[in-house]
Length: 199
Image (cartoon, rainbow, N blue to C red; front, side, top):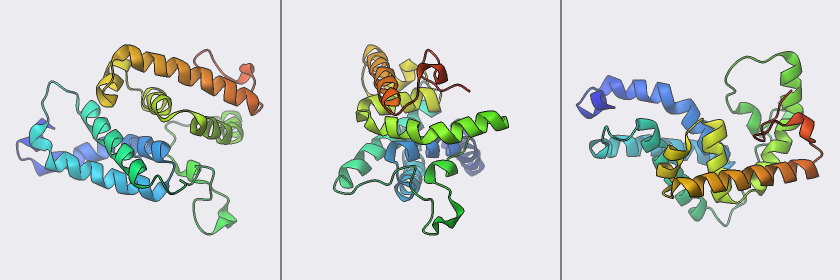
């Protein structure tokens, strides 16, 4: 980011290559709508370019870019509040013959064993449904922490609340997910102590 800020246009390509996937996955899970996620992602990178002079090295680039993405997600949700967002379980295309859902298109880091992959295919729709049932504040903290690997302190900076509030929202999110997953038939043996599913 320092290189881009000082005029090296190639540095922007590096930033996009490095962060595009994780930021897009966060936006997609936040909005639950593929087209909106793509639009918000484009707006995020435009804002990075336009506001590059405002970025300071004291803040990590990831914190800054997730703050931009999160704020754009909130704005997008306000603008689209009258519309129902497509679920990640919805067909990925108008041609439903391939059977893939929008959730299947979200990049999954790392290779999986066949057993683990089968388990994830079975349980992913239940997790997405449980996530949708969480209040927005809890869902965004959970997504930033569990899907993006961002620490509580950085999440506090991204969301604009104090770290204890972030931790509290995470605790309530985990409790809510456990309860909702239990209602959906996922028992404790398929989840670890942090609420993540295990094979």
